[in-house]
View 1 (cartoon, rainbow, N blue to C red):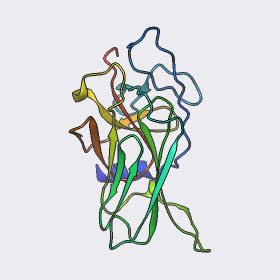
View 2: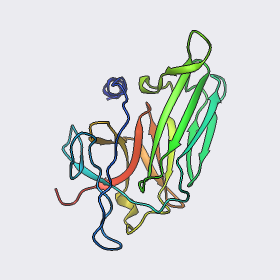
View 3: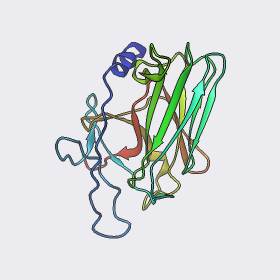
Length: 200
């Protein structure tokens, strides 16, 4: 299983496009995740064929937020982002100084874009190493406190969202108090909070 996850982590990470579909009435079902190249009704797992929907939320602000922290191999790090989202990097996650970056998008979805950079030949943090994986799992905590029309917290999952519109559940995750969900990540990409589509 570990080798499979590492192979998946080596897939180049591309920017994803999310298209929001309007709900016909207030409190209607959460928004559906749509692929960047073709409109899809759901985000479908490439392995289990399970489909998912992303939950919708009322943003705390009107602008996306990017936070970062420089992590040394002998120390860990912590990022707090607006909206109650956070990223915890344990000691020993990297073998050289690495800048971790967390971007929370304000597009009506509970999602975050995660990147990790190490120094290039000129000493600048430009080499994206997030897709290669880490020596220790990194903890992503996403808050869904602002979620609209959704009360079944036990159904929520942290999803690894690929650029082609497919999604996979993160294997290691758990619910936390205060409308939060924690996932242990072996590599970086784009992640979101969603639930299995009951209408498959």
